Length: 320
Image (cartoon, rainbow, N blue to C red; front, side, top):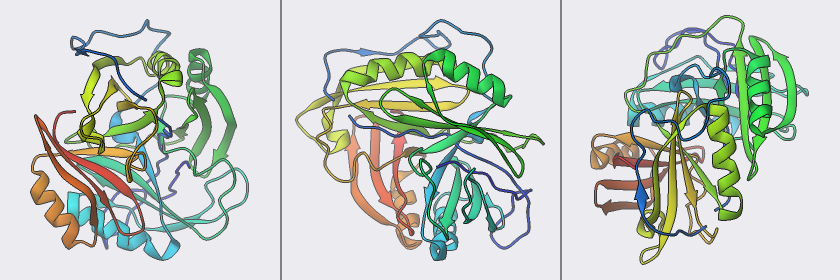
């Protein structure tokens, strides 16, 4: 779903604050590969530009995390014990155009931003299907850019307590929430930019990549058609992975046949750290459990972790 927090200045656990955010959503399926690895030259666009970029920055793209109402604080505490960072005070608010109530909190960490929700009512459709949201320079420009690139408008723009929101969908059922604040937020740059992990099948992957590149004004920085299947729990196989880098952040498109072992496909976002072993030790001490890994590969060590409240994330050391 999307996220808006009518809360202001970020604070560490226990301090007061006021902040607002909503986030980028990507959801998917998956499919195999061909041959060869291509890394695009830095700064070289992989698609033609279609007007000015509507992106603001990757620190304003938040993954949406849904937990039970009683587990919001436990999740945020575990997340911050693992990665550091700050959070806003929890508030109870209505963030959807149809009536609903959620406990909402924003977590800002060096490795990525999260909008955390604990709904106390049912979640109106189609919220909860998108995987996050992105801040745009203006709502009208953001929606126009998405539709021009080929995306469909799923939820028309609506007013929230601190701005406007809309949801668009790209090929493959990849939902993206756009948000805009009346008063522009200001968050510190990230130490490392996370990867939105989008699992798709080959039949739709090309259309998604084409349309998302056009919308994001991004570029392909990696196209590996023989990526090692061991990275996704399938040793002895290959798959295709495509990295898109833009002002919105990084999007890793994982193209498979959809026959994925647990917990792959449930990991919405991948977070880069400098020391995977130390990070996993912190996570386990803070109540998280390692669901898969750690995998030790050439240039990339990774694991998948479940935090209190059920949020599943990939964590890696090295570059994808």
